[in-house]
Image (cartoon, rainbow, N blue to C red):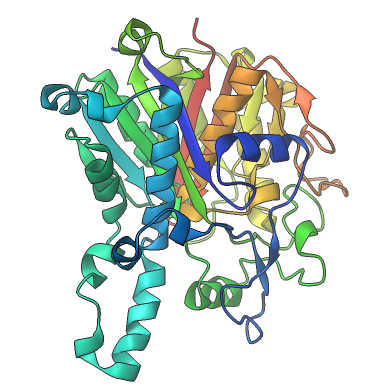
Length: 413
């Protein structure tokens, strides 16, 4: 099997509109959570989110603003950054070369921003006022298709959608496509923009969201005893996956090697994880098996860590099942504690962060972990960032539907 490495990173999220800003703020344990300003949330049970702050008009023309939903715009800009970071100039490649470059990007909800806006148009102004851009704007696969069009990626191209595991599955498929020789380079990851009135109401009414309206920046508190739900986030994470020899031949900087991928399902409940944690444990063990690594070879886990009562306890249980006694020696942290839950894009942003941990030999802390939960008794890196030589790590993602994904990356040996 061919080996796959990560050579480019791009992101937009509530902490920053690029990788450098995001990483610096994560290490300082800063929060991107604040009041919702995009719409009036006074009638909702939750009034805050981790929202992107970006002047879209500075990056897109008026016609493009009509054509693209927000989740696609985040992905387009992040793909620009990732390819630039990888040192790949697509316009310098001929058509034959571009046929070996693909786009596999996940989203959990897709164009809900456009759906809500055009539904209002339909109700208030009639069917003839619905935009002709509506369908291609809101369809989930617009994100992979538009990135392929913008960048000239002529190889395999599709979108994965599996709730909060969406971009985890996308990156797993990208890894396999390169391994199997179907492509040399894949632009992969995920994008999401679901902070809308309807979405917020739905998640809020099912009691999935934190309602800590008096202190939003303390609301996302994974593994803490006083956690009461997740915080809505948005944005994109885009990575350039590349075949190792292809990257070495062009002298690319390599952040990490993608070594393994595990995907399972609880087959239990559409929203609740199964309490024994065996589903995510099996995903972690599958990733380790593909990587041909023993539990003792790992130093770090970037946890799913949503800040919901069930998830954090069950993920802890799963880590103990997969790693045995070595679980006590792992550093574990939750990126969601600072930039919220990006739903279908969360796996991707967290793998961007994980690649930086391998490259810089640092792991960020879990913010707001102040009251230990007896059920969550591992090392979640509370308080401050930590210098750590990360030779191998797992990045976990668990989604509604019982989906479990674990991706193993590490130092190139």
